[in-house]
Each structure stands twice: as C-alpha cells, then as structure tokens.
Length: 193
Image (cartoon, rainbow, N blue to C red):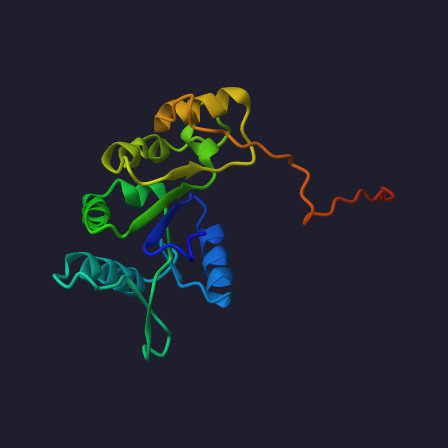
C-alpha cells in the first residue's frame, strides 16, 4: 500500500534490529526505505534528516523526499521511513513532520509493537504514550497500531491513548500464521555425574 501512495509512510517501532532487517528487505524488493536510529552512524542519520528537511523546506512543489543509492548516482523518493518513538518526541523531527504534513507528503503513521503504548502491556515505553501527539497534530493522516500481543485491556488502552473512538475498526487475527512452522522435539536429558 505505501509503495503506491504518493508520499511517505512513517513507521514507529521500538526495535532497532527489526528496523534494520525490514528496511534491508524492503529495499531489496525495490521499495525505497530508510531508518533513523542510533545504530547507524551520525553521518547517515544526518543525511537522511537533511533529505527530509530539504524536501520539506524547498519552494519547489515538486521536490521529493529522496533516498540516494550507495553510489549516489540516482535519487528515488522514500516510501517508508522507520524511526523510534523517542525520535517523534524531538522538536526537530516534529518540525519536519509538520512541514511534510502541510505539503501533503505524509501518507500514514504505522505504530508497530503498539502494545508498548499501554501501561498494561508487558513492554511499556513512556515515549509511546506521547505518540498521541501524531493523532492530535495530523488528524487527517491515517494511523494504524499493530501488535501481536494485546489483551483486551491493552487494546482498550491503545485505543484510548490514540483517540481511536468506537467507530475505528479493530482487526484481530490469530497467532497461528501460515508462514511460521511450529515443531516440538523431545530430547534426552543428559545427566552429569
């Protein structure tokens, strides 16, 4: 879906390793994506931020948020940008998001590991609670919250935090996924003497 929309989707996730893995796999499929995180060098983070700022502050209405190939020969528009919830708290990144919004460059906010929003969740992160700022500041931008580990109490807490009223659908699936195989193997216990 994000690859066909004209702007950029912001994916918020707490797991840097997951960000790296997903961005690598998405880029291999030809979808330009990037991430901003402490695990990569400051230079690369600054380059990505500069591209966002340049694209958002340009007076040219056709300017694009760009991702440069490693050879820097060709620029292509970003479709996905992964970041941490802590980055969303910074004034600089909020200013970039606000400018992108005004220029109609934002497609969607996707909150991964959304159980981290909930004080009832097993992995609560205070920065996640502040993501309600996105819903308040960008009310016309669609927002999804995804998690595989939410009890009914956690789901309600996520809904409350993000201002998802009763009219916002909640789609639930099973933990049993066709692409995951489960196997139990019994092993003999080795007893040491």
